[in-house]
Length: 414
Image 1: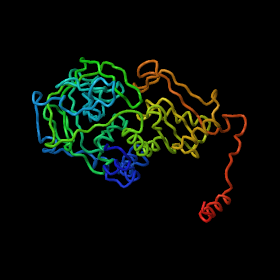
Image 2 (image 1 turned 90 degrees about the vertical axis):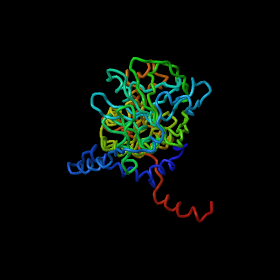
Image 3 (image 1 turned 120 degrees about the vertical axis):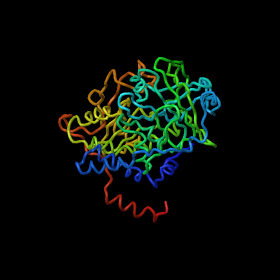
Image 4 (image 1 turned 60 degrees about the vertical axis):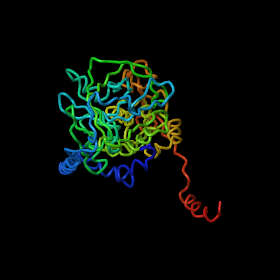
């Protein structure tokens, strides 16, 4: 339950509030937004200071085992739901390296424990780990870190562009660089503070059926072939703690991280799309299901431009439904969002459907795995050029009356 509440996550990041964490990402915003050459250079210097430090000794190497001395089946991996196929490692930090560029990636891909020396590696086709495997001419070296600094777990859960190193992002989130140590049997580095590290390979030619698994959509993901992780070596702390979380419909730890992510990522989104005011991924929509975004609308078709811009970003590429509202609508108040949708949308004019688009593989409504349609909803006020008649004036309480009520209310004792 490490990520059970926003307050707990902020404690792990050593931050008093979300604004402090957002401030730490100012360097990245400078580079992405390129406000000026001088500003971008300052951002690059700050990014450099967040680069990880390589150490020779680490707590995660207090105990070292070869393949024969360690059994995956001895890990306290969990079965969260009655009809799951077996026990799963649900919170692994999976380290891989691009065979062509050498770039590191850290992702969270569940692993079903098959036997003492092998486990499933459930990386979807869109994930960077799967991309690295597709470039590999043979077995891909993989390291799996369990535990360690929570900042890295948050960074690994964020849908970052391929060029952004999750370890550097974790350093920015935490406000201090991560410490890494070289692995024993693979050419990778892992967090020095990890509780347990599993080293091994994934062969692109080896597949094994994995699942069912109880997922964050509220459904069991059906069995399907997935790649297999083969254990070479394991290291751990003397008294290690096994991390895990339970997937399912919100409220969950994953939903807490998603809520924080959308607040942390907002300045980066604004740097790319300045007209964006706020963004909300409602937990009820299972993260990739729906996004509500408010904008400062300026011209006809502006909402559609924002939809296209967001779908073109890594973080939004798998979102199925995007609802665009005006800046006066609170995207976190679904009552306001529904009011805007019901009073500002004409279905024939304001619904944009895109066919044959990438979707989350966990979207069970799509006709083909990972491929389906997307829906854009323009719930903004229509401006000249979009309608032939003006939008009526909205009802608003007289400001002086509202002020007097606020003054009198406490005195009335109601």
